[in-house]
Amino acid sequence: MDINIRSAVLNNLNAANYDTVSATIEDAMTIEEEKVLPGLGVVFEVLWKRATPDLKSTIINNIVAAVN
Image (cartoon, rainbow, N blue to C red; front, side, top):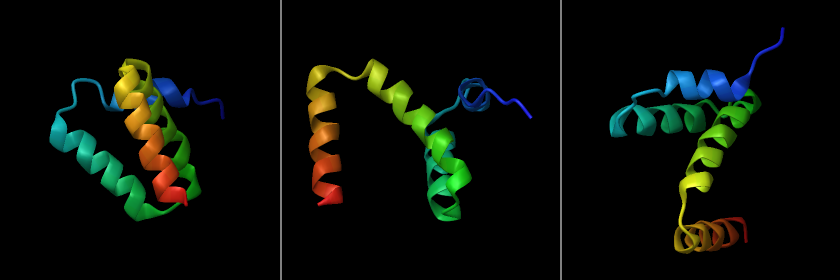
C-alpha cells in the first residue's frame, strides 16, 4: 500500500479549526501508537515552515527542556 502521509494528514486537517487540530493532536498522544508519529511529524513540519525565527527558537528550547 502506497500512502502519501503528508497529503493524507493535510487533507484531513484542511479547513480545520482550533478544536479540530487540538483534538487530532490529543488523540494521537492518547493512542500512544507508533503509527501516529508520522502524522504528528507532518503537523510539526507545517508549523516549522511557518514559524518565525523567534518561534523556532522557542520550540527548540522547549524540546531541549522536555527531553532533558
